[in-house]
Length: 464
Ligand code: ADP
Ligand code: MG
Image 1 (cartoon, rainbow, N blue to C red):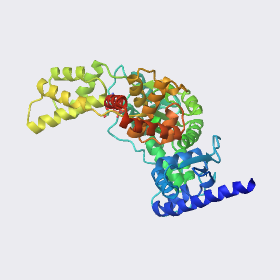
Image 2: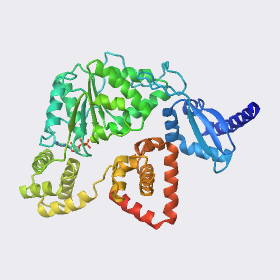
Image 3: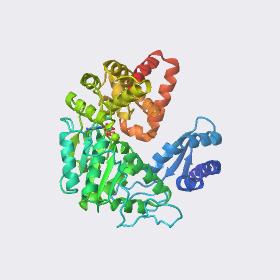
Image 4: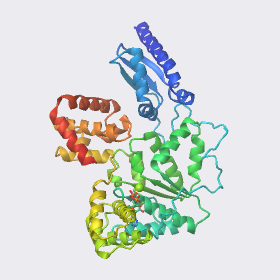
């Protein structure tokens, strides 16, 4: 019995060694030692190879970055039809420890040559990364943003002392980025001694991964812990990224406890940040939630006048009226129309009148690009199948629910950059294997099932 087991693991080891010898030539050395060396081959039963990885984050990272390589190499070594299973060795849920792929919990960093963004020491002022074009002054006030704007000004005046964290949410193009950057700039002017940093969540995520790779997590943490006002844009990008969320949680707590200001934005309310860790969500409740709503006609007109004046254009009132009434979705769309109008009138030397405005609105508004997110995909899929968005989040095995869930997973894989496990977590809290299976099922159905092709066409065109 014992002997059998040993035989099995021996062959797992042999297989894995073969894989490693191929992978070694394909991926860079640093990546190879960080992401492949720590893997421990466990068992092989003639079909499925089980490998042990240090953490969920590690598994997710492998799936996201090395899925194709792993698949190709294993196919080469084992032939088609193999299965790859993971088992996670350690997963510490501790607030302050971040599990390291190499097993270390407190990595030591060695001085290297070259520029290192995280090596600055405490007293240094850091570059805030703020865009000076986004000011409070150029952020037109309206009913749709009054609360958020005035709360933001209060925060800029007294950072850490009023609302903390400030959580700004609202649809795409409604001014989240502009507003939070304006708060940062105003604070920078009023408190030049403070360290202020604006960072998109996706950038934080990639910095974190690079820091892990370079064994510089401590520098990364120290850098973030010396900030007085931290602005993180689009935190919905953290959904499903457990490792990043853990680290952000740690920084968040540290700054909050030291009375430092946090400002966060998201394309949906905290309630809808599905699968964001509960302990993180409960922190958001401490602060202020400010929603940016769609602008009403009056605000749209005010914004239009402002943009037009900025561009040095003059436009008749009836044109302003027409644009304000026909472009209502987002402020970004309104800006798009102004830019096109300016371009059209200079290119053709034409006067800006109602006629030109109609043509420009007709051609710009329809081609406005929408952000395709897992969330918007779920909405579109459920609308198509006449389901409630919550239905596919449940464990239901009803045929139509299962199909909708699989289609949502397939489209999420096709249109977003999320990893398999991140897609699974956001759609019904399933694992990466379920997502992989869903993608395969839908791909197979496309070839043989007319209804499936029809449904996909309809859903995909409603997404774009
Ligand atoms: P979001 O981050 O919510 O997607 P942005 O902040 O990028 O939206 O805003 C989209 C565009 O609309 C930006 O160019 C921004 O300057 C402009 N904008 C948004 N809200 C306002 C406002 N209240 N006044 C003036 N311009 C605005
Ligand atoms: Mg934005």
